[in-house]
Length: 80
Image (cartoon, rainbow, N blue to C red; front, side):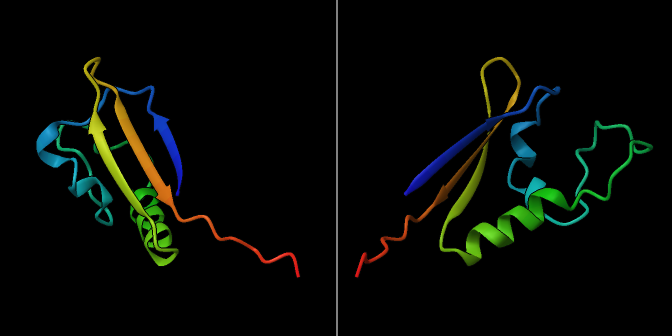
């Protein structure tokens, strides 16, 4: 498996909505509703990662920042 870890530089996400951030159009209740974006990036990422047999998860770090972890299977290519 290939592991990719991304740490957000923003204000973080409350623990109780970490699973919901992967739902299309979901917006964290405390975020400014007038901020741009359709909130599709994480749901699209989850669909792509899942299609390739991987997984994606979110955690809140101790410093309040968001941590996203992606796991993708490595495919061995035969040299012959």
